[in-house]
Amino acid sequence: MGDTWSAAQLAQIVDADDLQVSPLRTDGTTYGTPTWIWCVAVDDELYVRAYNGPSSRWYAAATARPQGRIHAAGEVFDVTFDPAPAALADAIDDAYRTKYAGSPYLRPMISARARAAGVRIVPRPGPAVRSEIPGPGRQALGRVGGQLTDEQLNDKER
Image (cartoon, rainbow, N blue to C red):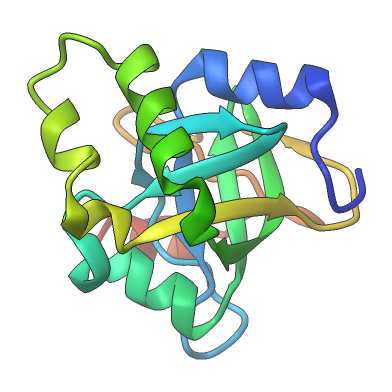
């Protein structure tokens, strides 16, 4: 995996509709609690928006420290969070309208507030890792390069 998604990866992520973002925390080593968010593809790129706009916690973390992970389609990917180009805002709106037509949450996701918090998710080099659910009620918390300890799992659940 390089700095673009393969067509198969992008389709798998968008079709699964289970994407969770985990920006790095300020310590630069710990990933934030995975946050579920809608995703769309535009021009062969992966985009998300913060429902609550720029004040969303995950968005603030992703803009302060743009490295992180996503959990999607049963895998964990190391990624970079880049601002979505303003020139694509209408195309991203259209992708949300197509994918999420009929949802009561669509209008907020194409609002000026959410448009101001658009993010392009770019894969970083390295393999994806199969995400495993470590126990009942726990979110997928796969790790590249090692397993989470019980203490880390408990911290993630707080």
